[in-house]
Amino acid sequence: MNKTSASGDPVFAIPAFKDNYIWAIRTGPAGLAVVDPGDAAAVQAVLDAKGWTLDAILITHHHWDHTGGIKALVARHAVPVYGPANEAIEGITVPLAEGDQVQLQGLGPLQVLAVPGHTLDHIAYFGQGMLFCGDTLFSGGCGRLFEGDAATLYGSLQKLAALPDQTRVYCTHEYTQANLGFALKVEPANQALKAYAEDVAELRRQGQPTLPSTLAKEKAINPFLRVEQTAIKTAAEAFAQAPCQTAVSVFAALRRYKDVS
Ligand SMILES: [Zn+2]
Image (cartoon, rainbow, N blue to C red; front, side, top):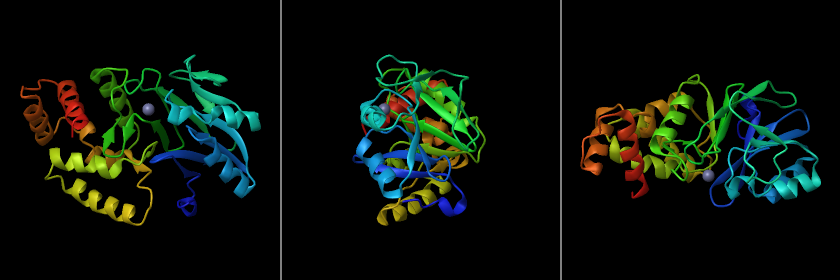
């Protein structure tokens, strides 16, 4: 499970539900913080197996598969629950907004970024070379537009893309392989994308996570970060059956295209 520990990465995945990852951050020899614990039992099983204690809970947005485990976890562990300043989320004890920082034990600060679009309350956590971006950016894709509009989500993705290239991207879902099927449809000649799709297929054959990704990787292969590319603009316009004059309009058409693909 802790496949990257040898490289010093303090983060590992706790699988939950069909394709969620609850990201677990080591906060010392026996401490753990978890991001978006939709399933308390999955987290508790790791704590019990390792004899570790829970230090903190971080939430990115209000969807149940990210928040459903809060209540049961805080009933057993008196820990701070960081998350968006959204009253709809029960159990948040430290409401956060753009510009705030979270200081976890044994780790440098994580900055809070407002990244609305998938939901309006969505935040991401960035620091120490890591980005926890929930359902905003996926490897090879991006979140669906449930609450924001295309321009809002596009702006949020641009904000994430401006972070350092080597940033490791911890998204909540193992959607990579399906996303790359669509990416190849709209940018079939992208060599980096083709090579990545082969790597991902092999990882999935072995039952391994495809995450974390990196921002450098995503900028090379993710169509939602590549709307200025001619092939992607052409594919978006063919789907929309109309010219797309701006990056946002390409992005909006691409998002609708993916929704029906
Ligand atoms: Zn969501």
